[in-house]
Image (tube, rainbow, N blue to C red; front, side, top):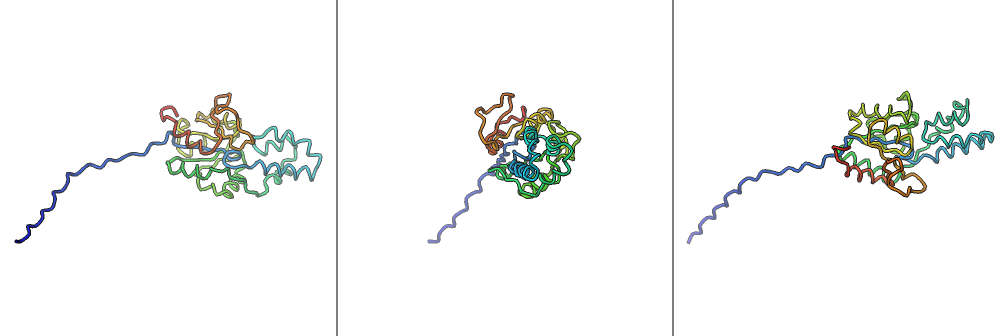
Length: 237
């Protein structure tokens, strides 16, 4: 007996594809300070101070003043500590030496890029030295906008640099986060109208609390930037 051909199964009804949109980032941009936030560079200044005092012991009288103004532009700190000698002393502090990346920074930047966030650097370091440091550490490619000392009329705590960076990114302050390590960074962020978080992962000892007395969130690890972004509500950022 001849076998009956097997009829093909009728096609299943088409099911509309369900498209899941990935979670939208809470903000559009993250701006970073450079020294003490992305990189450890204090050792470079310490070596420069030691070289200066070794060559000129009398310069030791200005060391305390120099360190008391940490967070301000290097050129200003040198002038305050050793008045009238900035042009002579500055080259000692700007000798090419790569700063050291904090652990976790590269991973953080890659994750922020993958999330579609724009990024910038705003620093009180002179532009040439800033570009040299970003290039030496391999970070430059992550930042379409880099603002250094010569790009502004007033350095931090003025919000000018932050507002300039956000303007170039095309992002309003209400949709940006600024991460920095100093009081000047915090003040600049507040005056610019951005969400500001303080990086303390470069400090020798962690603060006991997660919140600074002035209300600023303290971050002990670079990974916490991503964690905190995940907690932000777009309507409140």
